[in-house]
Image (cartoon, rainbow, N blue to C red):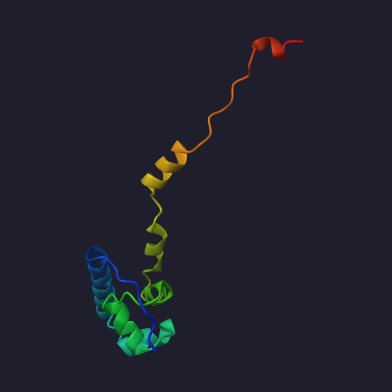
Length: 108
């Protein structure tokens, strides 16, 4: 029985398709066969085809394995590296420093 995949919004589906296209282009530029890349990535040729189509049911590990075989896994370091929204939300939730009630309290 096939696993159910949560539907993605169309813009995200298009991004995955473009990613798959870029992965396929990178493989072809290196003149590597699908069979060789799939073997090196530890997957079937069918899974590689799904990666190259931007399949939403493919695990991120499969994408990462193919990128590694192609020498492009360093690009993964950039994912979510700059997170301005997250930093703004974090900064907004920081507690305020409490003030001392009176200066005389600290004098001896």
